[in-house]
Structures are given as C-alpha cells and as structure tokens.
Length: 353
Image (cartoon, rainbow, N blue to C red; front, side, top):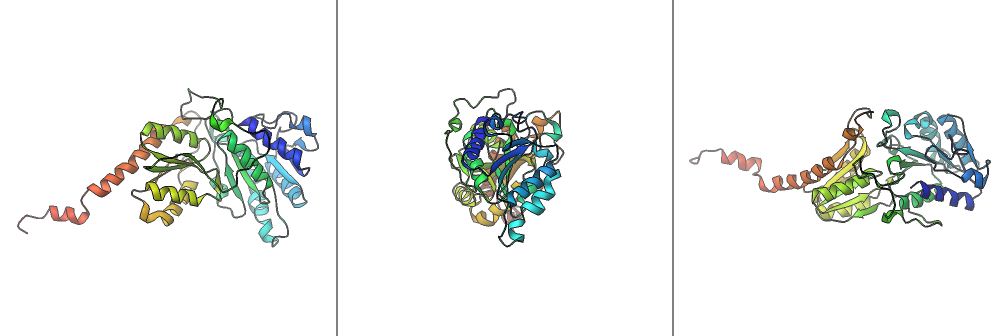
C-alpha cells in the first residue's frame, strides 16, 4: 500500500503544478512510514517540504493555500494528533464553500495513518473517523488495499472539498486478518495489482469484497480484512461491503445487499458509542426495516481509551465477528420458532379455561 500511495502522489505532482505536499518529515526523510519517499528529490523542495511539529499550523497553511488556488496534500503523521488541527478543519475548511456562497472553496486533502495493530498504545492507535463524519462540508475516506488506496487518493486530491483520508497503518505492508502472529505481505494479493498510471475510484462508492446470501457485513480499513477471515471461519455465506468512503457512504449498495440477506453486522475499530456504525445502523433501520430478519449487530472497539498491552482484546477479531454473524442467524430462528408473547400466555392457562 505504501508504494501505491506514493505512486498516486507522484502522479498528481506530475500532472498538476498546483499540487504540493507538506507535513512532518514528509520531505527529506520521506515520511515516518516512507509514503513520500523520493518525492522531494524528484519534484523539488518547493513542492514537497517539511513543516514544524504543529498540526494546527499545517492545517491553517493548507487552508490558505487552497483558498489561493493551490491543491495541498498534507500529512498528519498519526490520526491521534489531528486534534490540534480540528478547529481549522471543522470551522474553516469545511465551512468556507457554504459561508462564501460558493465563491471560495478548500481543495485540501489531509492524509493520516489511523487504527491499531502496531503496538502503538493510545497515542498511535486511535480511529477518530466519526469525529469528522459529523461535520457537513467534509468528505471522509478510509482505504483498505493498495488498489483502492491509489484510486481513492487521486479522487480525493481532485475533489474541490476538503477530504480526510484515513490510511490503515496496519495494512501498509500487507493485509491483516486478525492474527498478529501471521502477517502476510501484499505479494500475490489480487488487490495489489496497481497500474502505474492514473485511475480513479469515485468517492461515495463501496467495494463488494465478498458476495453471499445469509448476512451483510459492513466495514472499512483494516477491519475489512479481519471480516473476510471471520466470514470464512463462521461458515455462513455473506456479502462483505468495504465502505471505502464514509461521507458520503454508498447507501444504494448497502440497502440492496440487506434487502437480499435480511441481516447486517457492522464492524469498526473505534469505540461503540457514537461510532460511525451507530449512524449506519440508524440509517439502515430507516431504509430496510421491513427487510430485516434480525437486529443489526455492531462489533467494535470497547468504550475505553485504546490500551497499550491488550490491543488484541480491544480490536475486533475474527472470533467476535464470526459470533456476531452467527447471532444474526440465531435471532432469525428464535423470531420464527419461538411462540409469541400472546401464545406463551395462552400456554400457561389451564386446559379447562
């Protein structure tokens, strides 16, 4: 995935002279994860350059550059440190198009590695996507594979609205299936075939990663791969929808899938309370109420700060997700085989009544 993101950035720098890249250590060092490696040497330090450790300053500078015709791509080194930039993103970038009546806009892409799985503790492992999905004017993207990382990043850079582009750091060098002791690389993975030239994946379009008939499983980022393993372990036939874009999210694909399966499991790393899964669950309930055969189940991180020593107990794993899939099938069976409350009342009545 590192190479595909680097390729997308290189393509955009080649094509558009208004594209610039800056952030902490992105220039000479090539980024803490080496995502921008070689770009300063190729394109010059006037287009790829380092900044001080000031996320608020990075965002404010990008906002001003965007207002004046540039198309900045900035890196927030870890998503956990995006909050010093929150005011500039939420109150300035996200609102300028509306506040100016469409006279100004802010075509800024904010890249940031997110999620757990690298033993980073609570300062390098959080998934703060729902902090931004609640903000009108922002688009929120969460890639999961080398192929969609490049296509989504190019679409984000070309978007005239600000985009928060989350990158699952656990998947930078290979898919993560939930076992920290078995970590494959992207070698030979079908989603690792990435063209050298430009291509685009439209924002707002999800990816159907697996097709089935018994349950719809929805996720994004690294959890899309953990869900894939969980579906195989569960033995049930499931649609697996990798959301890719959270705002706007692909309601059409989700609704069509749930109308087919009648069941839904939503999986994300972030805490359960007010996580984006809650918004999806409510929206699905509004649109699919008469098609649901069992309650929607959410499998998430716990409502605690991200731990340092027990992250594998915190992050949703294949066992928890497989159990949730099975639960949707059991709820269906109970719904249609258990007597109704009225029938149970009758069964307790004396036979002579």
